[in-house]
Length: 433
Image: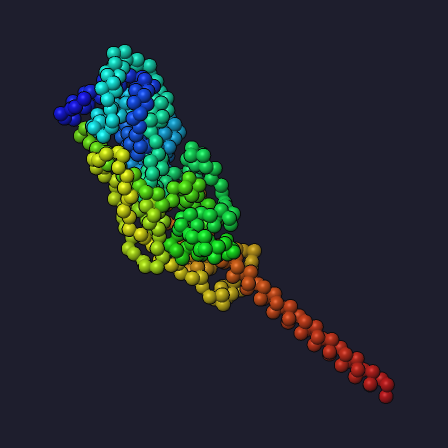
């Protein structure tokens, strides 16, 4: 089937709204036609957008969720479906089927369809079965014809995956995302897991891995930081994303380019949303792809990740996505130990929170509360190692102070004993005369 313009595609796609999703999907499966999941994400975003931004629903959202909607265009597949469920938003599955068929007709030449396939599509229209299926059931049926391509996860390019997830997900939703892909994300990882993660991210050789294998956890964290990558054994949201990518072996993947034609929306459907949209930028903490790693030797300026623009090409072609290696300048070293000692003389060891406040120059960024963490920009990061460094400084200070106090006590005791002996000696000499 060939179409001359958008109106013809739109009219043809509308015919399939009443077809049961299970029957429609089966035709594609029988003819071995499958789609990458970034197509599914595009369809979901544009199908549900008018529902998410409906004034009826907007008035019911919390301030936190309203803020996150500013980054709606960067929601992953799981988050769109999860938030629809959490906010009881009812979506008509006909809209999704219509948009799916528009996409297919627009890109039909890219797929190996046949006369038998075209005949099956026409035949399914003869007995439409508008079964009033739910949107969730419709998506579940369509899941079977989508796959996860290289360089992508949950419909998002790995080049902006970490920044997008940190900006739009909360921790429970992120853990659910991990379970979707069979990964149980923990609250903390041990030294061996941290070593494995760092080795995978930087593609360390066996010799390089052996060189750092004897390091303590804090030294591994410092080693990673010097190479331009901040991570901690206590997993915060950004660390959880790293752990998920590591467990799925997605580091340094070549990227399957998204080169389909997405010009399938009418002018009304392209209208801007009532909430101002955020932009997600690719940072030096992003997931490395196409074998490009963070290089700590030569600093480079930050590069912004532009929104992905689809181009037309064959789906079988795969080419690595070109990215410029980025690097974070080495973090400042902690203050001199003597300076820390002067700070701690006025504060007992038990009052660690106050100690952290007096050593603000050691910290890179302040720690956010759980509520604030969900609202911060993805490029802000609190360094977990600062707490451990401060504890080490405090311990060393009080250890030295304890040694000095002990030495002073022994000197005082010796002086007192000598004085007592001297007094006793003079008393004996005096009374013996």
